[in-house]
Image (cartoon, rainbow, N blue to C red; front, side, top):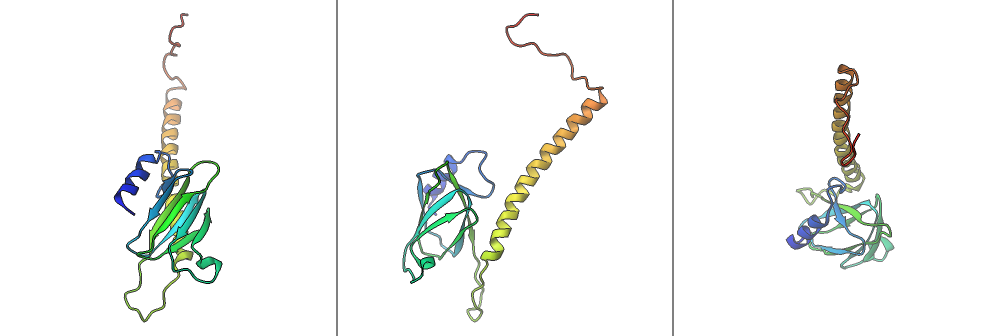
Amino acid sequence: MSARNVAALLESAPATALPGSWKLARGRAITLRPTRDGIVRVAHGRVWATVEGPHGRTPEDSGDHILELGHSLCVRAGQSVVMEAWNAHGASYFTWDPVFECVTASHPRLNLSGVLQPVADLRMAFAIALRASGQLAAGLLRLGWDAAHGGRRGPARRAHGMTG
């Protein structure tokens, strides 16, 4: 992924973006040119991905793919893939996870797609759980403070411009 594409994605991503994912605004496209094998996964929405050839004989090996939530696409180092957000209701989000190959060529390639998706899901769930834990702690502290002070919060504030 080029530095210009990364910068454009980061600038367009809101603070509320899904943790660990890239935002692709509706109707926008991006070209990925990975230097190592990896897996693109859709975390939200739908993406139309076109992978440069060579293409196989089955639909799974074709150049065009529609990826929805939970679907993934393996991309080889040196291949380029053009991805367009194809979501009628806003942005789509995707993740890129590099796949590390075995050192020796005598071992068959491992299919990590059944493991990497749960790892990505757990990473996202952990970020959400961490945020929720912080909010819970703050709420419990406020509750304890209110209980210790008899439910009093101090003088009521008047609305600006109103007299009483």
